[in-house]
Length: 94
Image (cartoon, rainbow, N blue to C red; front, top):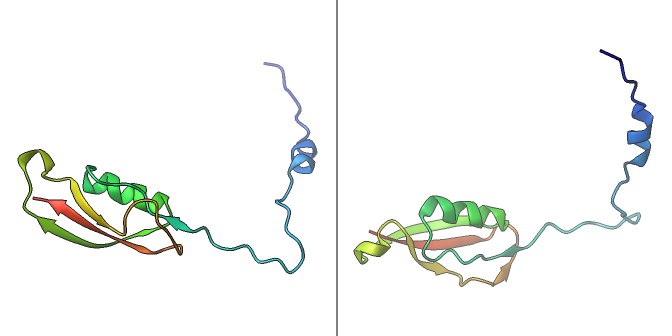
């Protein structure tokens, strides 16, 4: 086996930091409420977290057999822009 040398300085020098002016404060990402209607609760939680939101209250409501175990309601509605970490309440079909 031949040995291959790698110059790590090349990698370090090529790394660039995002541009940020002195005194500039980066705002936290906003929460854009995703559409989670029809999804299983676990999948809905993942989508909500990925959108920088949090899951609020999870209510349960009688639903048709096809909708059992799936999200049948959400508040606020999909597409609404809120502060990061805002709560999205869900209604789960049972």
